[in-house]
Image 1 (cartoon, rainbow, N blue to C red):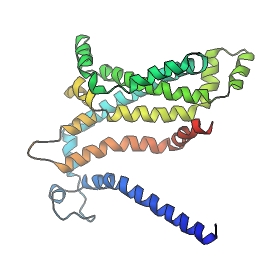
Image 2 (cartoon, rainbow, N blue to C red):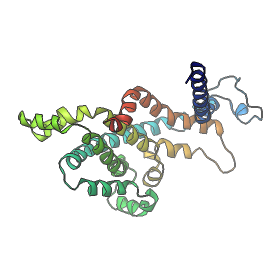
Image 3 (tube, one colour):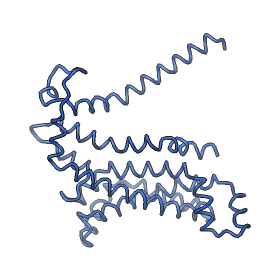
Image 4 (cartoon, rainbow, N blue to C red):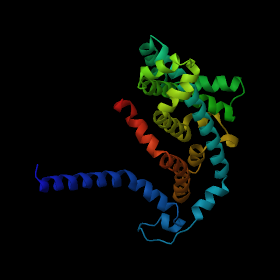
Amino acid sequence: MTKSKKIIKSVFTWIVIAIIVVFFFFPIFWEFLTSFKSSQEVISSNQTFRFTPSVESWKTILEKGFLRNLKNTIIIASCSTALAVLIGALAAYALGVNFKRRKMIAFQVIMLRMLPPVSVIVPIFLLWKAVHLTDTFLGLILIYIAFNLPFSCWLLMQYFKGVPQEIRDAALVDGSSWSKTFWRIVLPLAKPGVFAVTIFCFIFSWSEFLFALILSSEKTFTLPVAAAGVLRMHLMDWGALSSACSMIMIIPLIFVFIVQKHFVRGLTFGAMK
């Protein structure tokens, strides 16, 4: 391939990438801009990129108690993610490394994650109501752990299997126990995978809507439920809705940006092994 053809191919590739990026990120960018427009500019038929910034919409959602909903979401998502990844890592190490029938168990585990939430919402609501877990942080944390755990366990099994058997055997020969081998050797080597699983579990817990709507009330509403409360039948406050959706996206985007190096390594870790 000549140098000119390589240049043309490279330019064409970057153009395609730019089109894809604009296509997927422009709606998010436009929503963020809308959140800083006044109510008149939001409903104006002449939408432009040039406008006078206003925090009117942000004041509206703050007056509706969105900071409390933000705190609720952070507590629920953080606790459920940490516990799901911790328990999933322990189960994945036991099933993936030391269990002979791991393929059958892995299939059964991932089948639980494929179960549609709407199919179990009624019995879960009745059970949670009977044990007084509705409208509590613990109730939502437990249900998010239940749905994140199969995914966490299944994915981490693949990462732990990628750690060479010789390393684990050498640790055992040196007198290390199975638990010490896991905490000091296997888990640090699979750290990129743990970060990737953490991000996926966190995003699910952060953005989940159905269980948060059914199992909580005003005291424990999360951000997605609070954002849905902005909707009205005859009067739509698009500015407030854009601000609420922007608040929902900000923290996950910051979190992914901070750990993006580990996230990318985690996505390719299993394939490279």
